[in-house]
Length: 227
Image (cartoon, rainbow, N blue to C red; front, side):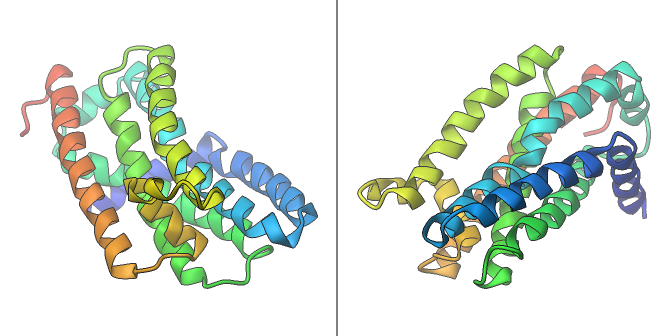
């Protein structure tokens, strides 16, 4: 019940600050552009857009969310509330997952004819992973500039190799990048759902453990005593 309320509050926060409106407008622009592309490149372009935008929204906005919560002293209250660090993480990840999936579907359905199930699975994996990365980068920051610098580094490492892996067949070694397993699912080109799914689950577990350490540290610094 506590986790459900936390997710609802985070979703309301996103609605209040026009996340849904802004992303709705952006996605409509994307759909118009995608429908003007040749069929030969439309599938790849759709995959890249989903992977690098709605699926990665947690990486882009998490720093601003955390800084706003700090400035409004929301985190100070949460740190001494019954809410556990695990629940804080899950509420952030869960609320942004809803946003990611909704707008990924808006991008995907008008242009793609492949299995929606694989796209949804890949988007869910990517959204969770990027939200966790956003929390890892955002927890210790004190300014938006710090978060931007940290997130740019993450984007270079996590975006470029997977995108190249579906654009260039001669870059076969890039298929071993963990996020290449994610983008293959979104693209519908996974050779093994078990292998790519396993890689994504392992990556999520690793990122969650790192994120939990960071969020616990942030809570302690704000006055929390929970472990």
